[in-house]
Length: 122
Image 1 (cartoon, rainbow, N blue to C red):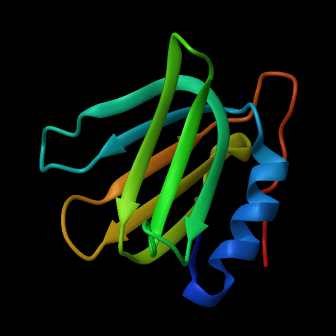
Image 2 (cartoon, rainbow, N blue to C red):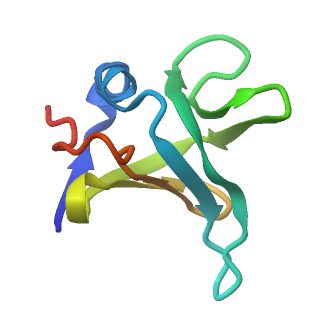
């Protein structure tokens, strides 16, 4: 496995490319709360991650998953401090997002069964 820490100045560009390369991938999102790490989403279709630098939600990372009204989730991470990308086995990608306050969020993406490939690198 390979771990890469993403510098804040590339987050917007990184997520633009990341979204294009991973759209529709099955994703699981969980928050890290000690031994009880609740899953917010489980194997929903990845829609994208955006980083808002201005406006009323400045410095907010928004993760969007699910491709139907019945199965859709938007999870916000306010004031992210550190984002790490971990390349897993068989093309999986994991993002560890650590906010200024609160629990870290982990985003697990697995390639669809018909696709496998490397993570986005900048």
